[in-house]
Amino acid sequence: MRDLSASHKEPMSKVDTAWLRMETPHNLMMITGLLFLDELPQYDQFLHVLEKNFLKFRRFRQKAVQTASGAFWQDDPYFDIKAHVRRIGLPGAADYRELQDMVSHLASTPLDKTKPLWQFHIIENYVNGPVIVARIHHCYADGIALIQVLLAMTSTNRHKSLALDANEQPREKHQKLGMLKQIINPAQKQLNQSLKLVAKASELGLKVLQDPSLLEKGLHEAVEITEELLTALTLPDDPKTLLKQPLGVRKRVAWSHSLDLEQVKALARATGTTVNDVLISSLAGAIRNYLVLHGETPEDVRIRATVPVNLRPLHHARELGNHFGLVFLELPIDEANPLSRLKLVHEEMNRLKSSRQALVSLGLLSLLGMAPAPVQNLLLEQFSQKASAVLTNVPGPQVPLYIAGCGIRKVMFWVPQNGSIGVGVSILSYNGKVEFGLIADKNLIPRPQEVIRFFPKEFEALELAILMQPWEGCIDMTHLRWLEAELSVELAQWSEVE
Image (cartoon, rainbow, N blue to C red):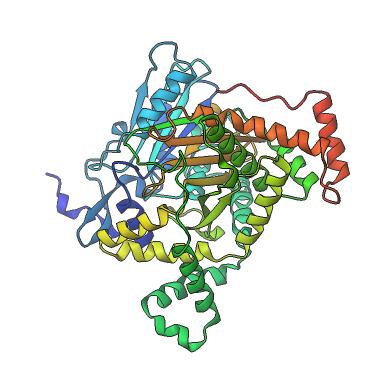
């Protein structure tokens, strides 16, 4: 007879505990992702890949257990991988709308708390090829960690992906480490902080919050961190737009046409901005157009999005858990001119690069993981009132990947929202393409594709604005001529929605 009392337990980190406790009927703390494949994987072969390379992360065999005194990880004595991997057939035409409805339903359905909090759904009959839907609770891992999990489950070679071994060949392992450095390192540079400063400031932030007398000792770091916390707490609430209304319990998802990453990079180089600036500017334009379409006049309105910033050292990249902070990003939806909007976004991003908001929020999440649930809920509600959306931008691998012998054509994911925030925006780059996704509370945006369709249009509008009205002294003419050539031969075509 199995001795259930002998199940291994280990304490959950305070930050992961905070994410576990954030879940409400209005906002499930679950990351939902899609892998669009070029062929259907054999069920047993897919299970084999998960057994060897997904479950090598022991955390995925463990349940997240929450008690009045805290939370811990516990081995599931009844673990059965087949309880977590299901095959699905779409009804009707099995087209975009049917897939959208299915993923929306899954994104609105809680994971089974009696088991480890993850599931894979293999959709076998989608008209554009098989799709794998992954659902993983946020307390298990953040976006950067999940990219590492994806790399562990895949290969850059179709044949090798059929026989992956947890002990990879040195060459394959080195190649994946190189891809991971490309993902981790740019994210770290957003804060322009050294790893020592991250560790020091995070620890110091906790000490200051627990012992305000430290301020009297003239600690420069403590002063700056406390100022950031006070600034965040005293931000005015976001304005009441269509995006800031009471929430329901159902989510709707949508995804856009792919953008060519090289084209985005060329536009960024031409304007002296960054890829992030260009994409966020296009997002702000898409939101503006949606609000105007539904009768709102955002001429004097700006909204904020909370943006995760990676604080994970490269040597911790293979660990699960959450290692990021949050910053408030102002979206200039009041600006109709694409060039002026890009300039405003660029200035805002530069301001955030010297901010310590992310460090403060990481320390605050640790405190929330220790605080009583009512205190955590009160502070989360305060913070969530100051933003209308969550925005995540994850740089993924720029080479084609294969899983269980199947090519991954496209990757998409959606992040959870918290408190009273009901809109989540996801930007992901993979294999030379940029993907854009939206998840929204059905009460706020019943048809999120109405927002999505404006995203590539706003990118096109920015390109045309550069060609017609260049910023004097800010346009790189070499890259401007490159853009002109691309447009003139009509190479900048959007791929079909999956």
